[in-house]
Each structure stands twice: as structure tokens, then as C-alpha cells.
Length: 357
Image 1 (cartoon, rainbow, N blue to C red):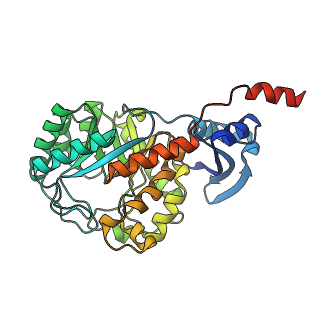
Image 2 (image 1 turned 135 degrees about the vertical axis):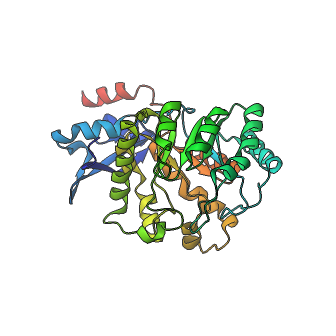
Image 3 (image 1 turned 180 degrees about the vertical axis):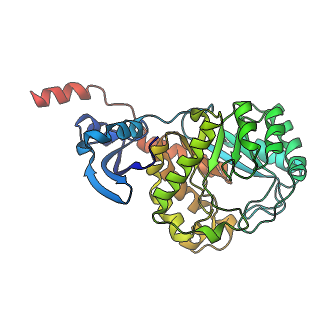
């Protein structure tokens, strides 16, 4: 893709209004629906202008077609998915120690699957701001028994949250379906080759620096534009090294190398990520920015804020919502789908033809 030119959708409509607006030529589908956009912000180098979706210039039609196309599944289940967070760590910011130990983690994972999680994300290293790194050996020792038992007990897609190539290779060999790397395959020089050789899907998350240093790099001209372009560069590197683009998932990295205002801005402008042509993972669960907005200092009390901040990700269609509280997110997702996902009204085209006549 041409990361110099970005089209940012605005004026979103859903459900029957989306069908009507698209049929009338007033809107275009965003990533195949269920949302459609009636306005478009055209961004090129340092310039941006807002136009009606119907008035996108001819030399932007290639970008427009990319924005309207459904995002690839990345070898995961179709439709929006809830990804359960399974931290096998003593020090994660929200639930550190709760699932530390294989038996507790396995019980928690089965409970998440029963509640409707389509994917589980198993992590053995805390990556909260300022967290201490651990060795790949220690990380794998935490993950291995949990991954092995869950693979036996369920056919749900299992993801491993790691920056380390050795852990990636071991996890793939033990049946992991997805690698989720907060460093976008930058931390370990062998990670690109491991993922490319395995042919498995991978999550590339936006971050600058490391969990220990990232907050030093929270300076952006326009956070949504800069994040999109920086992710485009990581996608380009991955593809150049043999990773199929359709197997790449992108994560805007809420809470990583961004201050509160930048996190809020990124969450407000998620549709811009459709420029990348990759499925999106959104992880806002219990993060500090939600506590700052809602005035809730305890991370485990932020589940209502998590639901509100996760649902806008569904504007992109088949988004993966990464959360701690799976039952609540599944319930919220089903209600959102009940409100906004609908079939094209029967006879709508015929009525439009009659109205034109």
C-alpha cells in the first residue's frame, strides 16, 4: 500500500441506514460493513481535506477500493471475535498472580472458552509500562503446560503473546495458531524468520521503544496517521521477509508509547486502520487511560469502561477484541450485533427503482 496517501472514514452509519446510503451513492462500505462512511478525510503528506464520500476524486479510487474491501481473516474464525487474556504471570498490571500456575491458568482458559471466547492469548511475560524482562526459558516454562493442556481440551484458536523467537518456535510446534508480538517482530532478530517459516498468522502491535522506555517516545504529529504509517512500515518488512500479508493482524497499541490524550485520539479514529488492509486486534482492557477517563483507579474495576472502548472496534467488521472479562464482552458484542448487523432489506432495490420512475 501507499502509506503516503491515507483515507480516513468519517460520518459512519450502520444497519439499514448504511444500506440506504450506499445504495443512494452517498456512502461507501467500511471494510465490507456493517458500517459505511459518508465522509472521507483525504490525507497526503502534510495536507488533509474533508470531502463527501460520493465526491472522492478519481485519483483516490484505488485507496477507496482498499478501504471498502473486507479485511482478510488471517486464518482465524470469521466475524468479530473475543480474545481472552490469559496471563500466566505474577506481575501483570490487572490480574498479576491470579492465573500464575498452570492449573489456575488452565481452569481460567476453559472458563473463557465456555463463555464464548473465539481465541485465547497466553502470555508468560508482563509488558506493562516499566515491567522487567524475563528470559525466554522462564517465559516458556510458564506457557508450555498451559498451552499443551488447552490444546488437548479445546479446538479454540490459541495465541501466544511473546517477543521472543525461541518461545514463538516452541509455541508453534506445540499447536499455537497465532503469535502476538507487542514489538511487531522487532525485539528478536530471528522472529521474522520463525513466523515466515511457520506460515502462521501474527499480530503486529504498534509500540516505540520497549516496555521499559516506551513512554519516552510518545511524541506524534498526528497520532492516528503516524501509527498507521508506522504499522504500514512493519507490514512491509514482514511481507518482504516472507510473511503473507493476509496472515497479518494489526494492533494500534493502546497504552503503549502513548499518553492519555493520544490513546483517546487513537481510539476515536480506529477506522483509519482500514488503510492497512489487515484484520485488526483492539486491546483496551482495563488500561490506565480508561481509569483516567472514568475516575477508576483500580484496574480490575474497569470492565464497564473496557466494553465501551472496545465496541467501536467493530466498525472495522471482523475485529478481535482482547479482554480480561470474556463473559461481559461476549454479551456486549451480541447486543451490538443485534442492533447494527442486519440483512439487506428485501425489495429495497425494487422500491428504489419505483421511486426513480
